[in-house]
Length: 266
Ligand code: ADP
Image 1 (cartoon, rainbow, N blue to C red):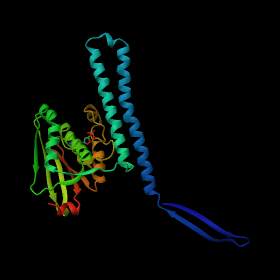
Image 2: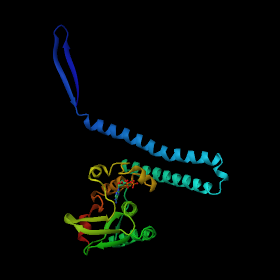
Image 3: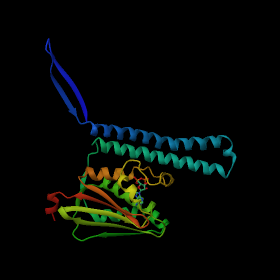
Image 4: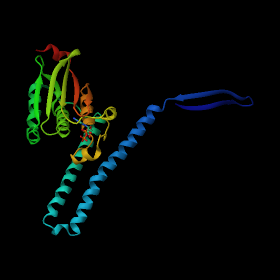
């Protein structure tokens, strides 16, 4: 709380009154603090790939270019880092649009089972590479829901790609969908992966928060996937939550409200 104290004087009478203004600045300060942290994080996240790229390019200039073995490897590192930077900047743009509410949703009636099948199809190559099985369980009674298809696809892509990234070979992923209480659509993505330590769980939706920064970077992660997913769900009026057991797996769930008109429509 900020306190501003002003005394009132009347000529000749000395102090005759006082005004105290109490202002709650905690919220404001917290916002300012998180903004500062965000800018510092962004700078750091952009600097890291740039530093790597620079050192590999220098090594190429210093002779690695003539080395038939090294040259292609060094080039491939710089290309991967460049691609990660592009993803990072794209993610940042998405977040800033979501923050400024510029992201208008273009909703269309969507068949949920179809949508989930298509996510699984998009990842079929990566799933096969790691021999991970995927299963879609859509309970009966799910009606088409009005949602921004591109954006919800992005949510699903982020969750499924995390599930694949953090699940060892031969694991399993299940996508569930059901109509929950209060006419909400509930979708969850569950994996049998490494899980998230309890102490990290409260901050896992924070921007740039990762359990293991080095591993996330090696996997090409930006640390923004979950925060973007949650912002998109929030923009739909929904909520996202996470349950995880280290060593046995993670389940990320999101709820989307279904408008009453849609509930009535059969
Ligand atoms: P990243 O680009 O690092 O994957 P995310 O925002 O998508 O960023 O996720 C943040 C962090 O949460 C990850 O770095 C990882 O530590 C953890 N995480 C996310 N999803 C899972 C999962 N399914 N299993 C285990 N850890 C996960």
